[in-house]
Length: 352
Image 1 (cartoon, rainbow, N blue to C red):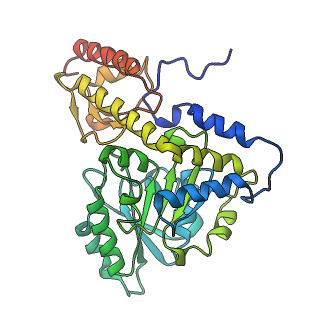
Image 2: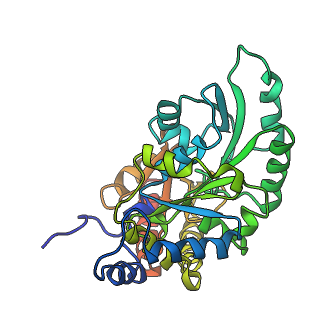
């Protein structure tokens, strides 16, 4: 019998989780006879309606295979060859997409230092002095992640402030929304309030980390940016022939707020995990827990011992900070068992 891993429940990534039963059911229901390819099917039409219901009547959604593709195609809608993207130094498009934006689009990423994964107007303002200078790549897009790679959330007001500043200077605001659902669940608000209503121009929407088998979307919130999207998606190798199976997953997540249920549960498990180790001597949190990720500093020997039995990543080896991630299918029992082993490992290796 095949097994997914010799370890207990993974705390390394929500990408390690399985598929939500409702998503699997949606895929099976889409597997009924023949359907037109490349998005000419009823399931993709239903998906488009579901995204408009969440993000507003002007929104257009394009199903894609992965977040990197959605980010690159989205940025390609607004970038010229001599343009630059201003983003946090921790941004996924910079650290974990193998230079895709730069390689495929030929644009420059300008990274901004940040303590918690978030950037502000003050961080961006100093980069705009080169506007109009032919010797410099021209700032064209501000890109933020929601939630950030540090597990922190932008509020709607923070996003709106960035959007207003960007638009006042002729820039666009892009959002990497791989965990947008987690942010909305944590903040108790709608997806629209953090995007359309806050002035975001375009975003990638994550499904795979929140219960899908493999489904992301590019969501364009300004119709005047939309016309190249079909061509850039094809050129970017993100056009699915049997698109109904991707679309059905996204529709399932957007039906009856399943996206919120999954994300809220994952977030609750992260808070449970953080609370379970909060009183341990020698354990401290690098960032506040605002989503489904926990970033604690642990004794070095405790990390090594725990990694013999659990999957998780070291975030900052110099300071012994690790990253624990929970998912829609993480249970209280998974968390409590992990907490018990963490406590034992730390107690046996204090201050190491």
